[in-house]
Length: 316
Image (spheres, rainbow, N blue to C red):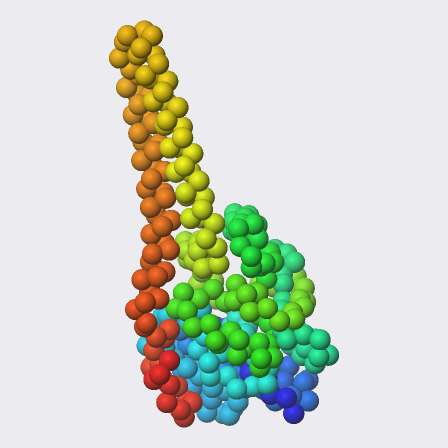
């Protein structure tokens, strides 16, 4: 029998865990032709999330849990799950059930056709989300497709079923600044996509703030494109050429009219404009430098506080 490892990153999800577990239990009874391994990753939760994991693992041997020493972020949680999962196939899904578990049979039957190494999912609607967030998400995906060679489809999710070859290729990417949605496309292999309509959270509230999503989006752009640096260089070149024209214009005017250059208010505006562009450009360069800074530190992606896996995982 094939073994499917399900990786569920969690941060303060005490309300959703019982609902998700019951649903996964129902799905596992329907899919009697496979065995399941449930990997719950506690990303430094401050509620009773970890207690639920311990309770579930005491009565269900399929339940494995890893609890971080603090909140390291979803990317680290997914990486931890991928590193420890040993199933023939591996799937990542959110605890809030916005990644519908009832798609698992279809994902499995599709990947068993032998044509694909990965079966992804994509939301066709964003019903229930704030309008502004939906607009920003669409803009992000358009920007990523324009400036990056990595094609990330609008509405794509981390929820997908991957074979062992695909998982190993993801794990071979050791960078500290991880953007898994980009990695899925970067490693290649044959992938197909299953679409579904947006599903609301089964309980609780989202842990993603707008600022958090914006920061995550910027990290994704910086991780998979150097176009912002090119744009910065082009802006600098444009204003350098423009300044040369202004200098020539001022010199000619001085020679013809013999009066000093006037208009201090316009000069202040130009100085502020150029200064703002310089700071903006330095900020972009700084983001790339910060990524390098974090990479060369060589720190682990996460630190385990508690786990029911009987192995030594200090070398991460």
